[in-house]
Image 1 (cartoon, helix red, strand yellow):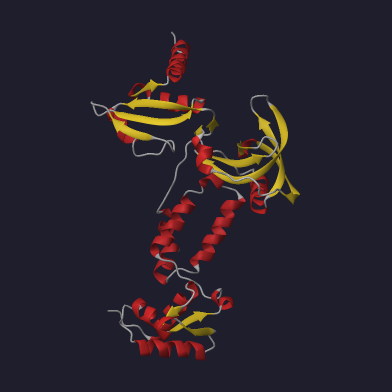
Image 2 (cartoon, rainbow, N blue to C red; image 1 turned 30 degrees about the vertical axis):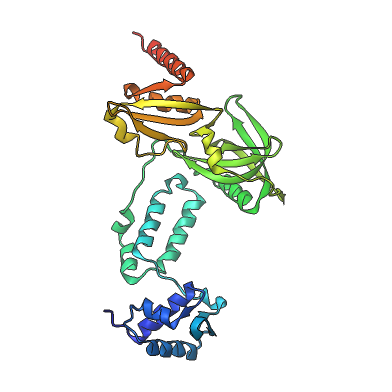
Length: 330
């Protein structure tokens, strides 16, 4: 059993008080694994009060004293991090490569330095060692470079947090000409090495996805947009396969059993379901629009996948395969 000194007990009591509405002496006994008597804990609380810690006492159930800390004092007490929390921070930092050379990367670095001040000594020592920064790594092939998009990303963030109406000048790839329109920004989306923003377009009464790398200008207006539309994230992505939107179709695919381990343990669509055929091949069913991204994804599995339905999807893939063959005629 742990043998706590009075200063260790007082510090632990302060940490508990800073993260709880109140604690009773019986709860404190439990926190100390019943290795410290109730009378001793009561004396510790009196000592804390005597040295100027603003403690408040009140009676709760069974006429037991409950102790709490004045809210204004809680912000002065650092809450130490545990090992798993420190590792979670390192994992998040490793997955921020999308924001390399942006202000967001700098802000995360500053936040990490502040958090280091809350680390227990054993973790603080590890965090200062070079090897501890290499616990996690991430890699995204074909990732966009947003180092020149600082102002646009910051403006989008401001628009989201402040709920401000915005004007966006957008590069429409199909026409090759920029177009301007008003939007109400909802949230960011990170997808396969790219950064996107989900916006509500009021005159169309619908949500759209905009690619940040295609935003030429983003202007925030002073007036807030009304909170009269709700964003249903599940429904938003149900109507897509990846980023492309369209009318959903019932899709059924058969994957060869040799690659089923690459398919069945991943989430490809919110409506997906899996089953086996008699030869242990993997049958995948879901409802999604037939889009270029869906077709490209299916074709990426080559001879290991077969479209069972719908017929329209089979025909489109067959046409694509014929076009590819013609491109490689000798």
